[in-house]
Image (cartoon, rainbow, N blue to C red; front, side, top):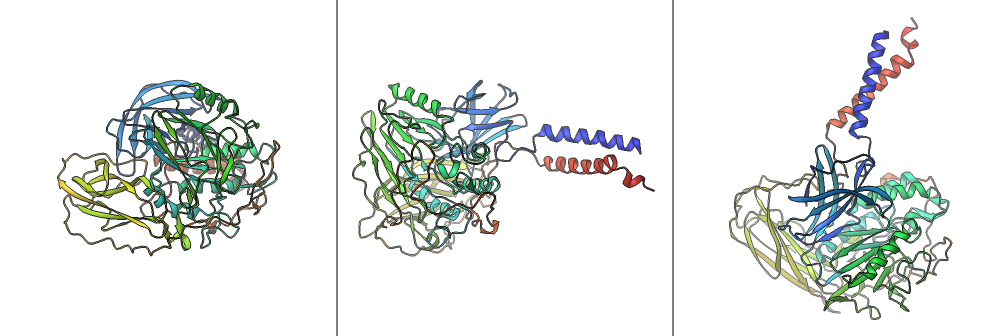
Length: 613
């Protein structure tokens, strides 16, 4: 019996060592031993084909600096990228040691959003939707703003809000097709994305907050445009809020950086949190460098709020003015400040996909945003859908045939009910293998995937509606010749591979897409939410939003999991792999560890159970 117990102890030690060394107890979304810190799907990087992007990797263990490979992949294919160098360096706003990877974007990359994968032996680091390949970083572009969603776990009401008057996770799925279609350079979420904290000692608790953040991150899956996410006071709290240190770690592990910056050619963007100042000195230093850099021609500030030009959390102060700042927090759409540099505020996006539009036009060597004092409803800010439960998207696409890789001809009608011209709109055709031409748009990328399919990305000038009628644009595509028989690698980590069972040359006259055509929506421009009330600038001490009335659940109160929103629409992955990929053998190791531990407890710790007779 003693010998058997000894063998069990030895087996337990071996199993524990194997399990711990495999790292299988680390979160699927965040491995503290090694993870890609930047870029991430909530803090993306931008580059042209052939550019080199900087990748920050956090690590609590030594990593090799040679032998790394990199791939960029989307939902249908992967491309090999070059790891130019790997060096040790400072990461996370220069607060800790880590690794700096320089990764070269392949010259033949399509103009799309990609997942970055770094591999070295059995170590695999994955960052979803994190690298946006842009045709020309120095060309005119527009962005969209979403703010103060206050998303919680309740089911949506018909108008998109929840029973508590906050936003729902459903809404992010309803507006996704529209965002993908109008194709902004990026979407910025300027805080209060979730409704977690309400007061210093009144919040949903860590367990529910984790569920909410994971849900929020998962709703971004399927967005083909980059998403920049910043925290607000209801996301991250103030310095004296309960469990604030645990909450900060939770935000970083699930969402990512709370403060960071990025460049798009000569265009600089600074994203700084509003309620905490852990990274404030870094943000100021980074901005000051950009202010003094003659290659920077425009400086855009993004934050949840700005108290004033010389406040304790203001990065671009009066002596070094920015070109523009975009904020939320006040639940109003207005010119918030304009004495030194303009600060534009957007009303809460709690219902019907209320969003802001900002068009940066290239003028000579710089950019110009000329709508500071002339912003107009349904032109510079608008709802993205009408009707119950997102029924009618105000910018929508209707394909003539199934867009699934079985067609050699197809067409799409794009209807715009918003009085704004989206000149860089995008439609994506997934066709049978071949070479294609289009009318009504411009091909920006065309590539084969797997063995049977060709993807064609088409730029479309989605013209604005008038005050009385929508505008419809039609794009047609037709196969003009066959392509080679090369098989191109399917994605491994981004999403499930595309179906490769279809024939190489399908019929020219397949059945049409059975999906119903959406009903007509009223063309009248939506009015602003009359419930939006002014917000006073908070003092240096933490304060509450005067325009926000619904209290969050008390601490420790968990939401009913049955109220979680419906899953992602067909064709989209509702969850994606995290930063570290592990094999299915991990589950065997877990089972081995559990069984061995149980046996050890029975035979070693409680021997009297078996020796009592």
